[in-house]
Image (spheres, rainbow, N blue to C red):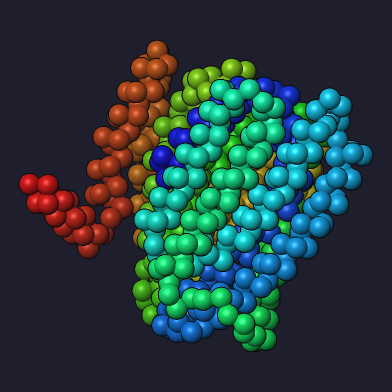
Length: 489
């Protein structure tokens, strides 16, 4: 996860320099047409993985094979529909709405068509990737993720040394990388999961279950995407494109940092679904608390030093930092921290399969974001208010999700406050005081980054051990450390 995050940030810098501002902008604006449809893959992947995990929890491998074949049919049909839809809608949008340089139109169309194919093949990869995660083969998942980002880094270096149309070369290489990763994942699944095979089968009950679950998950993702795009539109209307640029950079940093913890949470999702499937509710409640606590502590380890040194890091990373970027970054990272607390709760809701009411309630609360932000911006508030409202509403999301946990898993709010919120609040408060004192006293920015990060680690790691971890968890950590020491000796 660490390698992936660092390589992605470095790759984006090389690609920008190699393509140049115009071609990089063309690739991103053309790709935005595909991004508009990319929200579909997340809910479908969550639905597929949920049913894999549920059947594995009951040790019913025959049904896992059935879910695989039915989901693959759904993905094939969806891929054909999306291929036709995106091609028609995208070409109309490119020719009629986008302002592209005439001399680069041919390269832009190459980038568009190849990006559509990348999206379709990525969609077909989901049933296989979900199968790997459901079986908790996290080592392969980590290795293939590293291979993918390294291939993309190689693609970036190709732009520096091969003298052809760089935008066309970059687009072709991206498609080849997608094929390579898809082929590796399919080969791994065929070799490791012998009982999962392509077969002609039809079970209307499984098909309806997959479609129903995917439909409501899709509804929630659509609401979330609409709210995010709505906020970007509001910022554009009231403050112009400069603020959109600042928000775009903040989102990129948040995405890279948040990917670190979201990959960590992927490891918990199969356990949550399998535990629910076996009916072990006490273990399920323990998993909810632990996933929330560990996820927050892992992300805070990155977010805290990053926020206190954000201005210096942005200047190192970017040549020209748009106004508002540093404050946007801080607020959006705080939002990411709050979201980590809720992750195991929506995983548990998905495990139950009863997601209709949950998605309706959460989507309504998410929709409030745009309306409240519009009212405040109309009244003359600064652009920061948008993210302040977003963070405030995330506290409401957490309360709603806790209510669902109480009804679905008999999960106690008091236990959540005692086992999760109290220790992470104490640790966060102590860490931020130390960081604030150091950044206030040290002048040189590079020295400040190094000293504050080192001091943070010296305070944070012992604080997590003595405050956040239970006696049982401490025993497990000591046992693991001792076993590693004995093995090395």
